[in-house]
Image (tube, rainbow, N blue to C red; front, side, top):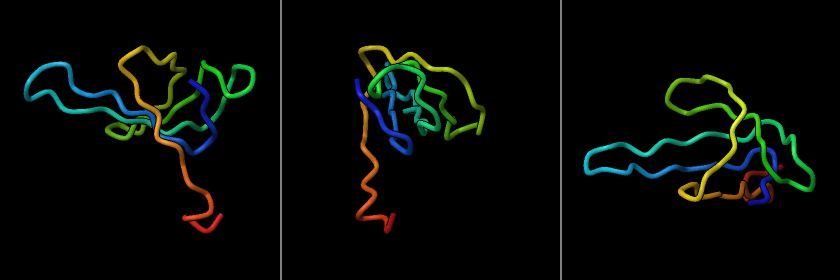
Length: 68
């Protein structure tokens, strides 16, 4: 996984009825966009160091579409 600051990581619920979780990448601590990442969780606003597992999906932030 290679992320950029502003990208979103989504972890889908593992069981029926379990909600998805998502976080925003706010710092990259690996080389060339690799983990670990400092993230801010969408449901709580909590910031933590995160090592994504195989169940994590990366959604790239489109700077051009968002006027950056």
